[in-house]
Each structure stands twice: as C-alpha cells, then as structure tokens.
Length: 358
Image 1 (spheres, rainbow, N blue to C red):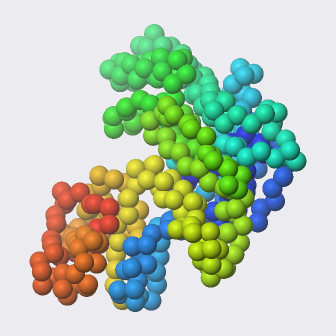
Image 2 (cartoon, rainbow, N blue to C red):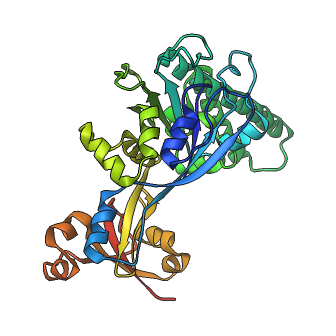
Image 3 (cartoon, rainbow, N blue to C red):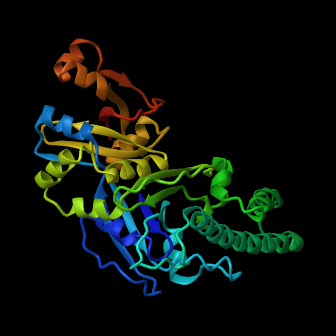
C-alpha cells in the first residue's frame, strides 16, 4: 500500500512525513523541484500488542504502509489550462491513494503560496488539479476509441462500445468538476482502466494541519472515498522525535490518549478498503493486510502463494473471542475455533491458521 503525501507548497507535507517516519527530512522554502522521499511505516494496532503478550513470540510484525512525500504540485496547473506530466505524473499514478495536507496554521514567517490561508479554497484547487488532468487523459482516450471504431479493424466492436460508454461517463463527470472517486465502477470496468491510474479516482485523506491549540475549521460536502482528520503537524513531529518513554510522559501530561498520527495512519489504511487478519504462535505474531471482502484462500495467498494454491481449510477464531477466553486451549474447549472453507469471507481481526496440501 503506497500513499502519496501531496499539497500546496508550505503546507507542512514534509513535517507530516517526518512525524510519520520519525525522520528528519529538511523542511522550509519550496524549491519547485520534483522531490520525493519514501518510507515504510508500521500500522499501529493494539491487537498485535495483545496477541504478543498472549503468545510471547520470537517476532512481532505489524501491517505496513508506504508513505511518499511528493513535492511539485503547486495547484496552478488547472488555472493555466495544462496537465501534470512527466516524472511527477508517473509517481502520482503509482500511488494507491493520496494524503492531501491542507494548511490551516497561521505563521507570518512562512508565507502562503496564495498569500492568504483558506483551507476550503486549497482543497478545491487540488481537486481541480487532479480532475483536469484526468479530463485531458479521458478526452485523448475517447479520440482514440472514435478513430478505432471508424477504422473498424482490430479489437472486438462490443469491447470498444463498452469502453466508449465508460469513458463518456467519466467525461461527463469530469466536465462537471466531479472527481472520479464519486463514481461507482464495476470489477469488469476496472479491468478496462488497467494502466490509466486516474488521479481523481484514488481515495483521498484530507489532513488539516493546525497550529498548537488551534480549532479545526468545519469542512462539509466531502466527496465519496474521502476522509478528513485534523492534527497539529509540528507537535506530532516533535512527539515523534521523543523516545517511547518520553512520548508517553508527554501524552499523559497533556491528557492525550494517543497521537493523532496513529489515527491518521489507521484512517488511511481503512480508506483503501483494507483490513487486518492475524497469524499467531510461538515463532511469530503478525498482522497481514487484505482487502475487505477477501476470501480465506486470498488471505492465505498474502502469507504465501503456496498456501493459496494448496488451500484446504482455515482454522479461524475472532480476535475478541480469543481475548475473552484467554487462550487457544480455552477457545478450542468452548468450540470458538472453527474450520472454514474456500468461500469464507475473512473478517477484520480474524486469527487464521491455514491448512494446505501441495
């Protein structure tokens, strides 16, 4: 899972990246260059900690998410009638979703690229940037399809017609400044979109970057597959630089249950339609990532392809049941450890043991 951190210059993108990664990438004036920093981060999950306490494994492994700090978007492409191109477009298209950092904090020493701080304006500007880029790509595709249909050679006409219907639907939405993530797309239609990487179709998490103690503005009318979280970027970055012990003392002093950053990581994970299942034992307790709605064999494939190929059954117990009963021996005695077949839909928090044969 790769999430691109985007936003106008001087919004705190790299500050947020440093907070997420406990890094120290330099922040400051925008250079205008296309720069990227990448890091893999653990997804905080108290369930993994509890399983580790129960099984005392040799290794404890959390689910992972990759964050990419992407500079180069300044929100001006749409107003200039152009499109995103080259290396920047390639990087953006590879992301599974975006984290849009929006400046709310006031700081006269850090001038806003548009002179005034206006979160709603900046959210709309970024949406317009992505929508316009997709509109140009869709128009090119429609021109190609019309030419292909006119020639009457090559691909099946029925396939071309289905693509025309889909891309005309996209064109209508984009022409009305509607991001593609607002549209419902079937699995069959998604296959037609392979290789496009439309930017406005990707899920979006909007992060309102506040000053310390600043209240978050009200943001309504969010698009589908869009979430919002408010946090104090500078404070979160400072907390991230503390040792775990110092961070706990700091949070306790200010009566903060957990860093907002943890909630942001979980929100970004959830936004992509992902969930965690676990494997647990003396050797390893581990969180695995799988899409919501995945079957038991598909989950087995996340562990190893051989497990999916030779899948027979999955031993399954819900995390809450295991915690309530106190261990696997008790779970078996109470009949809570059950066998599930190939049609079983994995639930968030399931603990699986795969039976397979090759």
